[in-house]
Image 1: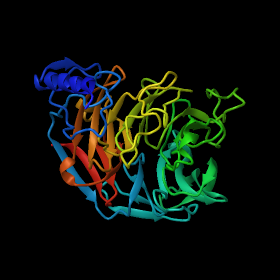
Image 2: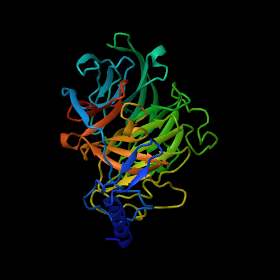
Image 3: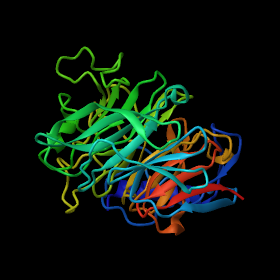
Image 4: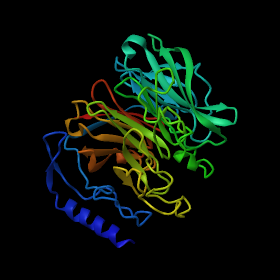
Length: 408
């Protein structure tokens, strides 16, 4: 294994084992350091670009958590949004939405949405509410849609009825082109930024034929897009005056982004994306920047072969704030900003599929400053996480569970 990598990991482990304390800029509590939570061997011998980029020291929540399963009969849930009244709007992969009461019981099932192609990784995907939802009741979601030439990641919107039993005035406002005959890497998360525009993630559709399109600014694959509520390129986008780029592009060089979190306090965007065999990433996204896929990566092909030139850094391409090797398969994420879990304020909470836990990644000065793995004993593939109106953390899993994480 690479000596530089071993030396870096040894230094981190020694530092963590000492259980030193440091001050977190996000709150006034002392944070104890523990050994890194990842103990398995990495797939590669690539050295990190900087200390703390991977296998950061472990941290532990001091408060005793109260973990409840409020529902375990959902059908492959994918996305979730907290309604102002404490209820939950949840997408299910096969094409329906459900509304759960605050206690997790089923209130209604919403059908009549645009048809989804649920093959492979496709289906009804991410969901978010309009910032003015209390006035206009508008909901936005992504889904994989069959079109001429294959399938696309599409964005739709509609109005949720007052009784939360139906959605009307449905329209598809955006399609990420080109279409492709494949069923993988749709991305599919979306969130609003501080100016009221939608940020939408797409995948590069996985296959070798489409992988290079993540670097192609004339396509919408492997990108984060910034669009208006009507699906047009948002004003002020970084490539608005570039004739060789789509005006809706916000960032590029992404593999398959299934986590987006907007930090309103700092006007910052965080994204979480799947790596191949190793190299899952956390990025702090800046407008117009290139995040490297597939030219640079901390992962390998699933076969174990090197990807491209086998490099992890290149001029003009951004480094991830943090990465995992082996993978945890990170999906939905939220930047915790409520006052309920005071220890978590300013932290990223990330639902993990193959990892079967929720990552708590402490953030300090836009860098990782400690990692914890929550709910690891549940044996669930966590698909999405969100914060409720009560400040508690909620999560959904591929196996159909709906969790509430409070304090005892």
